[in-house]
Length: 185
Image 1 (cartoon, rainbow, N blue to C red):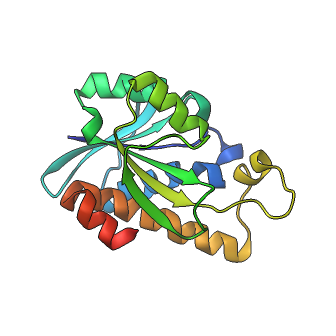
Image 2: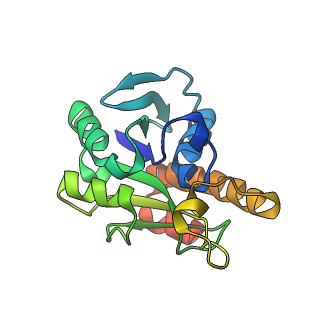
Image 3: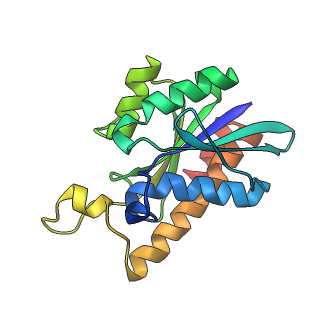
């Protein structure tokens, strides 16, 4: 079984912002695998599906981004998922817009959602699907940038990256890290 977690902030005011790339990717995965029934459990919206003979739990933590680790840990305990079967999809400032990178393990690079997960799990060893959003233009505040809706060309890049992030997460389930990195990195 794989637990695929999309990071984001709950509430309409954050819907489809750059920081909610993970939520949007999990919604795309749900559409791809036919997961239509969502329920609230362990502080998250969850849906179950089967993809190519693998059981999946899709999750969107409903705590804010900075406290995502609690719901992730609760879900892992509830479903008996180990860190090697956790896939976290999140926005990434240090990757160009429209680009996706996949890796296993690593630090949090200042991303508070990842920091929370690292702290709660006591490990950094899990899969990450990093959806590139790029850095803010000029002197724009980072928080304002990540919490804003992409406009025009940036919106197209964002939608493309979210879709690629969803496909990369499913590729990890199907063919593993090396082949996924060859296809997406």
